[in-house]
Image 1: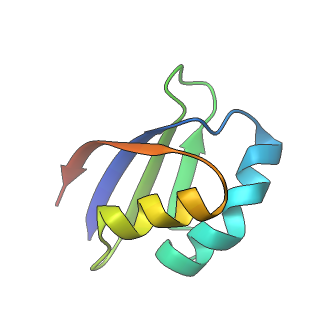
Image 2 (image 1 turned 60 degrees about the horizontal axis):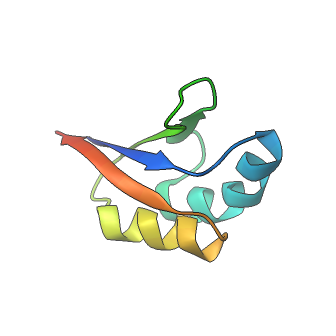
Length: 73
């Protein structure tokens, strides 16, 4: 299982609702979360065989930006 964190511009629950379909398709339902309390709005994704690029593309498709913070295996 690989965990990747991204700094995003997802600001509110409405934004989360917008990215949900794309992230569910890419990472799988329940494999990701956004910390809206964090100043950096950290998106954490944990999934098998997932690339940072795929996550960034999913976020971009929904109209948001994601910048990789850390990758842990």
